[in-house]
Image (cartoon, rainbow, N blue to C red; front, side):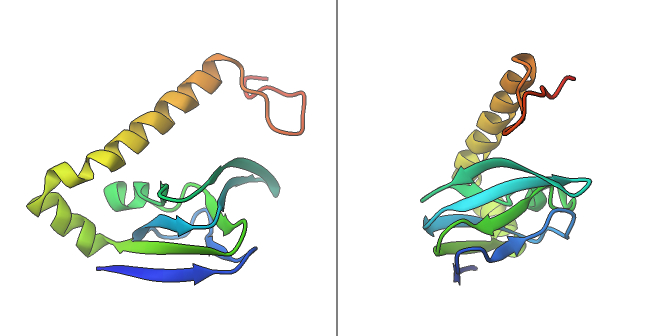
Length: 128
């Protein structure tokens, strides 16, 4: 079942390392995705209307790989694990958009690594 939730600007949706039990689809607003490493925040990106996030945990049951914070007042639809699994059994073609998102993000990550991605706000590259 999908539930609609409202998050105020600055509100944490989930923290890196916490259990994953659902994914989110943005109806309106902007969500910041960031990685915390030894207390340092690295903004990975910003997601907007119709973007999905938190989907990896529905697939692999591992803890959250990043932190999600409402960058502005936002409305999201929460897709729980039961709904996801039911959808995968009854209509596997409906999961194709999620697979495309995962593939796109993987390609972008590989591209950044190959180009010696510079961390925002620094002159350091990830491979240094």
